Amino acid sequence: MKAQTGLIMGLILALIIAVFAVINVNSVEVNLLFGTGEWPLIIVILVSVLLGAMVAGFLSMFRIYKLKAEVRRLRKATNDNSASVGSRTAGTAHENDNKGKSSRSS
Image (cartoon, rainbow, N blue to C red; front, side, top):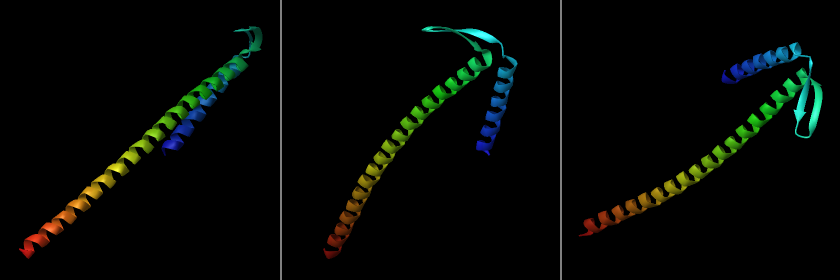
């Protein structure tokens, strides 16, 4: 359900951007670092939206990568801790068995 809501909201946002871009078809002067150019405003709007989406996507991918690395680290630490606790518990149980046998033999 969450994915469907996200898809519908994305489609609505894309439709709003498309309508806004189609309404603004006039040519505008675009100042770049290395010169200027005259482009239709629809192209400027769409390129800006696409670049913004790409930057947001890359930042999200970077964040997801960091979170996955943290999950791997925490799982490894948990496995190490549970193995450590398991060996201590097994050792304690073995010691208790030995104590029980020695007290019985006395």
